[in-house]
Image 1 (cartoon, rainbow, N blue to C red):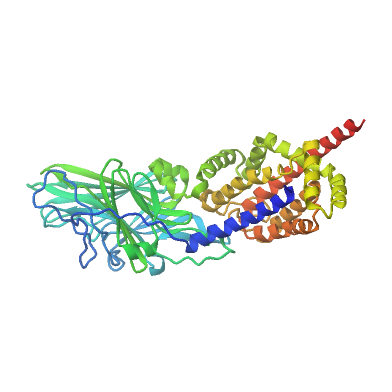
Image 2: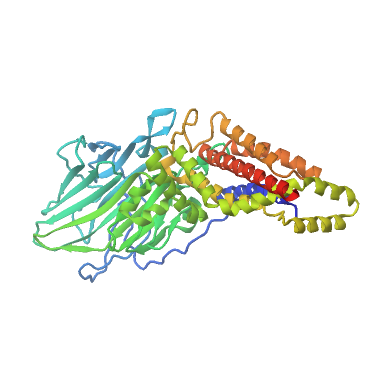
Length: 560
């Protein structure tokens, strides 16, 4: 078996695999999960788009409310005469409408849309039709009467709140019914955090039992992704994501349109909307059973949850608590809210490698404070970990390099007899204890880490727009001047010089084209990925150069 032939096929196989994965993401069939059957509609809609709560005629205290189809809500965010409350923390600026206490705008202070547009910040939520997003919450009651839902009018003592130097900021809104039920809806913000704790405290000042349930929902515009090989971000998922207590799933727009609402129940679930590196999510208290529903109407998705009916006795009070997250998918913060929330950072089938790899990169980053340097250090550690394994491969390559003259002589002798040539070559390999397939081992080891690095760079917001040095100002995008890919191509050419040249002229020409082909492919990959490959190639060159010298000395010593 010819080592160089295997190397060529391995390279072409990698490119074919990447092409296939891209095709699958765009056009391949998507898995369709079975939709949970429901018995009675608990969430319906009326003309105002308000979820309607219906309960059985005979109810018991705290009886669960059956799940139903998701509420199909029109533009329920008030943008007309409802006063707005502006909340400014150290990480974002939030707008809350007094119409229902809806979070209707969120601008992330530390995340510009593009590196060269520092004042154009990412807006996760907003009232603009092209980027509509809102987090709505409220309470529904069993029976008739006023209720503090997301269409009710709340009041606030101020229209502006700023965190300034405090560690925590509380924004209270109040609501009062005609018969004496009062609700205080509180939004809790903490310094440096993108989590928003929403508390709804109800006080029953009436003479009768109050029964109702809390609900929350996210509305987002479904935006079509224009795929481009020149922009790796365009291949990221944007849309609703759910977790049913066991697994997470991204829901496709077309599937929801064809199959209808996706519903499920869980005591440990959540729902959200992904926009590549950013997430809007609602996470209820663990252990509280919720009925979930996700649906689509035209270009807008509605992901909602409603809890079990609760009772509040006359003169008593009760607090309903839900956590919303509006911000970048920082894994440390997501894990603090709920460990399963880190599933929104999707590394695909290579999670088993990508997750530990990201952890190692994060540990190194804490010391070096530069993600590019962290990539170099981690690449060195990976190379060191597999040094002994690749050393035997390198020795075989070095021995084959020394055998080149003898192999050429065999080819000249048996040029008209292929079976005899193969037999002679195998005897030579056996006699000299050379494994011609050993050269493929480094490639086989590198491929999983290469692909894992790709997904880490693509999915981890921690590396979004992260600078390295000089002209590399964003490791998650391509090199703007293609300098790093050119360095990589030159390094691959240098690496070829250290390896045995193919005796077949056709293979030799293909091998000469390989650095050019790889340079072309890598020109549009994230520069952090190219940095990994350049570092790995340079370390491989250093290792092979050292092994070649050792093998040459051993060969000379054996001759004497």
